[in-house]
Amino acid sequence: MSFTLASSPHNHKRKTTSQLMLLVIYACIPAAIVQAYFFGWGNLIHIAIASFTAIAAEAVFLAIRNKAITPRLTDYSAILTGVLIGLSVPSFAPWWISFLGAAFAIIIVKQLYGGIGFNLFNPAMAAYVMLLISFPLQMTSWLPPVSLMQYELTIVDAFYAIFTGFSSAGYSIEQLRLGVDGITMATPLDTLKTDLTIGMTTTESMASPVFSLDSGLGLSGLGWEWINLAFFAGGMFLIFTKTINWHIPAGFLSGLFGCALIGFLISPDTVASPTFHIFSGAAMFGAFFIATDPVSASTTNKGRVIFGLLIGCLIYFIRVFGGYPDAIAFAVLLANMCVPLIDYYTRPTTYGHVKEVSK
Image 1 (cartoon, rainbow, N blue to C red):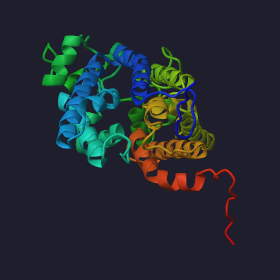
Image 2: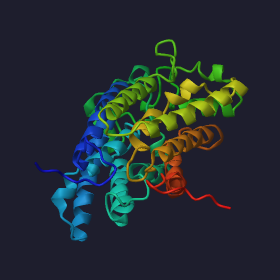
Image 3: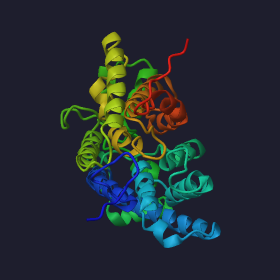
Image 4: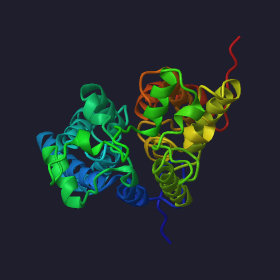
């Protein structure tokens, strides 16, 4: 009889890095399909661009560093980074947005720190923040849901718009952003934040077609609630398969929901409801697919809960008081900076030792 000795923690259902990465990629598929259904084919094209760029950048820099290329490319971490970036950028953003994002994530955030396992920050979110700060117009030009658009777009139109800036019929991105009423539309989070800034109440703002609460579930904006539910389903799959732990998503959603509930109870006319915050923007995406990055997140169970709570609270405060309508990337990067401190104060006591009490 032979035994395999593994380092702690001793997990009887051990998976290789490639298996873990593939499971996360599979879990993204439902949300990618839902996103394509509501916002067109653009994100699927961006996923392909970002994934190809990530693989190419990884191969080039592994060769420069004289590292074995095939084993590291087949761990699928580069492809996962490309998938996450492709899901994050606006559907009809220019092709070079996902290209630059994936290249930055792999070259600067990952490889310059030593490759997988050594990066201090989540590569996809660091790339997203770089793109948002450098190209705010392209990164905030989301199209309205397909059902609210003036023009019907095919996959050919998506290719034309992404690579030329115009649909096959010659409509520009700004023209495509016009809703059926001829008004340029923004995301629900951006619409609500802008309306509250000019003195409207939450109820008045939610009369906008972008919310379409009468034709949706009433959780947030049209399309976005279904995307978040798809990410939630994918996240449950990851927890069920023990690909991720429940601690970070639970802390993340609890922090966001708790802060939103307090704010809503204090001033329901000037802030959104807790369910709106939970099912808007990239909340579920961040909770299950971004914050749970095993390299840049906390490593203890208690620390993971605190890490998630910190991200959830930061998201709420940036959304309400900051300059950006969604805040997942900024909150995750700020929490990444706190991981060493969180781990230091939450590390478990070694078996047989007694924790020292300062006098």
